[in-house]
Length: 315
Image (cartoon, rainbow, N blue to C red; front, side, top):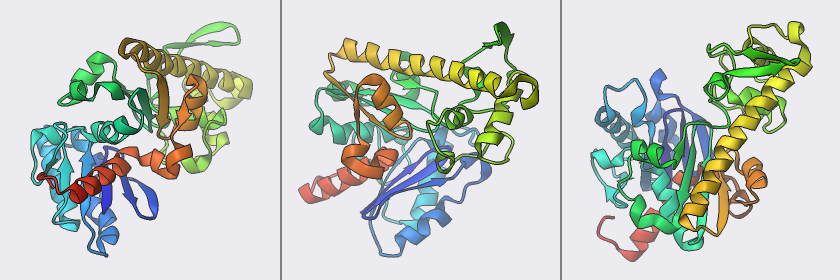
């Protein structure tokens, strides 16, 4: 059994050898089938979740769902797709849209029934109260945004000006440019929160994934060269971005935790260790290893395997 999570920017696979993350931006005609074919060599079954149907290369979600289902089935003809109703499907249906977070909740709710899950990846932060599973079924991403269960900020692909409109630069309030000059990955790289090997998405300027290159990109946020404001000035920009992002995510997690009576916080995704420390929570990497970086792919694999063993009718 193999688990697959097709996101807008990344394709994640969970199999017996661990988690495998492929940068696969759908808006650039990503080769989903070609990436998956090597995993299909041993005639394995595939269980699939998705969120990439929202990519703006598609006219609407159903077009995206159909594209993803078709691409996966070219590699795995008998693939089954988990939906927001908590069941598996053979064909494209609207409920397949953005069901990846629910698969994670479905698996973890029995292990951590009183926990709130934060899964913070490259692009988004999913905040999921595991003690409210029955109320989670059927939620669209729009409804999750309204409830605060989904934040569009992540460790790698968040544009700096989406969170900060100005910075204090050498004691002077300085508005930032709204151009896509630098991303959250640049801030986290210079702050030491991630290493270059974790900078898995494209850089805003398609250049190096190094501290020096990230410093240059961050300087452009205030329309400067690195030499104009110096490394100290750039580090101030990174720290101020991080302060806002940390507060945005942590405040929301703590609010939902209070509202739902959750007793503990568990954290997965690219930012697991960083935010587990900030929230005083448990880093799921300690239990799941690198599966925690591809939690929905791991979860849908576990769900499918469990339902096959139980001979449930939807599998």
